Length: 105
Image 1 (spheres, helix red, strand yellow):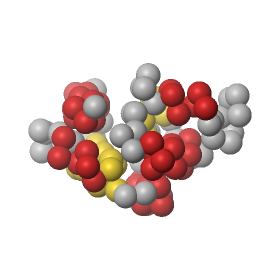
Image 2 (cartoon, one colour; image 1 turned 180 degrees about the horizontal axis):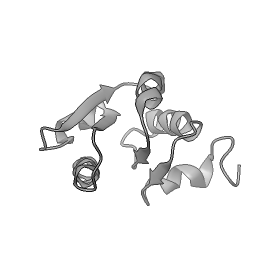
Image 3 (cartoon, rainbow, N blue to C red; image 1 turned 90 degrees about the vertical axis):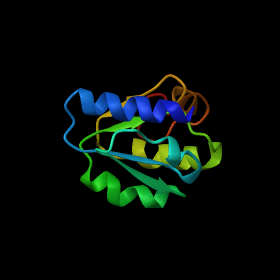
Image 4 (cartoon, rainbow, N blue to C red; image 1 turned 180 degrees about the vertical axis):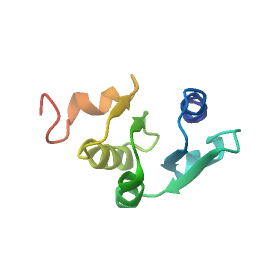
């Protein structure tokens, strides 16, 4: 649900995150946030995440709207050394195809 993106981003702000950037498929970008402090980065594919991951301190992963693109993005994020928060819907990505280096793979 695109609204989940907004809730997660605004929760990060309320919990004290200094900078919140949301990388999401272009279709979901309009639902990014009502908070002006949240920077939305519409992305088309996993390769676009590399520059964002280099600057990040942590990552929240939600359910992908586009499964093929979402799986590729998940593999990119899970392959990083960043702390991850994975929501219940995103756990479905682990069920069938866990990325290398993740328990159970």
